[in-house]
Length: 265
Image 1 (tube, helix red, strand yellow):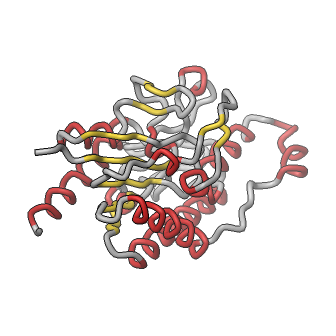
Image 2 (cartoon, rainbow, N blue to C red):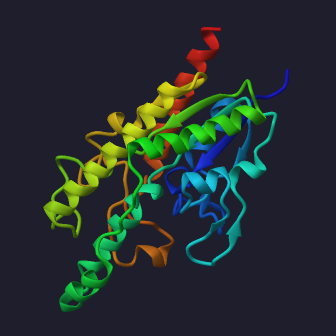
């Protein structure tokens, strides 16, 4: 019997930057991200196309220039195999300026008297993308997948929750209460886009990672997220991203849904 073919798409929250081993430096892709752990659990063939910094447009049809070494990656769906049985997608945050904004605001908190000058000319990263546009982009990705692999089952795995009630502004993170509140609202927009897209297309299942990760945000004792540190990039880590424990939990959630789906057939 042929192995299942698992295909992973998405951004850094799927790629797993900073989690050893890094198997693709340009994409900052880990060999222990949730897709690799899931493939092991399923004994499945894996095609991992995830790339840190990717937007849904980079998944769909727009080449991506990577952040650090300026390598140009082809759109993820250009490498999508027709033999795919299961597809996982975690993306959309970069479309909203979500993780990038958190990191920029955190680094700027150390800029001292220059901060007001920088903010005057930069401001907060803005985007015209709302939940409806995000859902439209998700649906475009889903439709393209279905045109290539019509029988593939697609799982939209939400971003884990980064900031929660227990996250203390100025203590756990170098952000103000207003900034933390802003990014928590961005997370709600992100989750709304996921939910709308999952409901709009057959063969698509939402994996509510956001809800499952409440109580494991930055600042909690059992966190599934990396916090912030000025020297993190030096060690290959990216602030405010899932740690190995977070990826392991997502792999487990996906595994249970995939096995339940196979039993119901």
